[in-house]
Length: 170
Image (cartoon, rainbow, N blue to C red; front, top):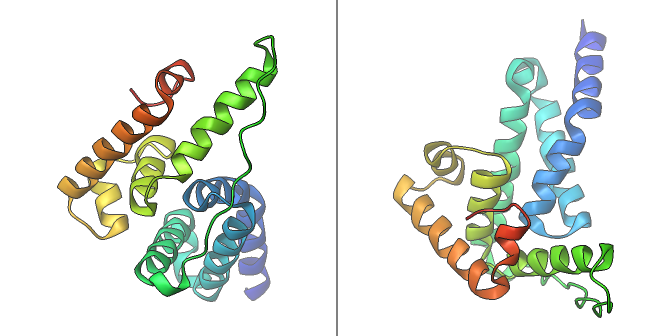
C-alpha cells in the first residue's frame, strides 16, 4: 500500500509540479525562490499524503501561499529581489518589443508590495474568487478587493496601456 501512495505522489508532482512552480514564481518573482517554495510545500504535503492525496493540489497551493505570507510577516528575513534592467529597444517593433514590454510589466508587477502581488496572482492568474483569495491569504474579502484595485492602479500608472494591449487586467 505504501508504494502505491508514493507512486501517486510522484505522479502528482510530475503532473502538477510546473503549474505549482508558475504560481510560486509569480508570487516570488525569482525562479530559485519559487523552486524553494514549491519544494518546501511538496515536502510538507508528502508528510501528510495519506490524508490529503484526494485534494492534494488545493492543499499544496495553500501551503505555498501560507509559507509566502509567513515570509512577509518576518521583515528581517525578507530577501531583496534583483531584476535585470529593461533591454534597449530595437529600432523595429518585433519580437524584441514584445519581450521588452513583457519585462516591463514583469518588473512593474515585482515592484508591487508582496500582498498586492499575491492578490493579483490568485485573482487573475489562477482565476480565484475574492472569497477564495481572502481565505487563502487570511484576510477579509474587502481587503482583497481593495488590494487588487490599488495594485491594478499602480500597474496602470507604471506601464500605461501595455497591460491592456497584452491581454491583462483592465
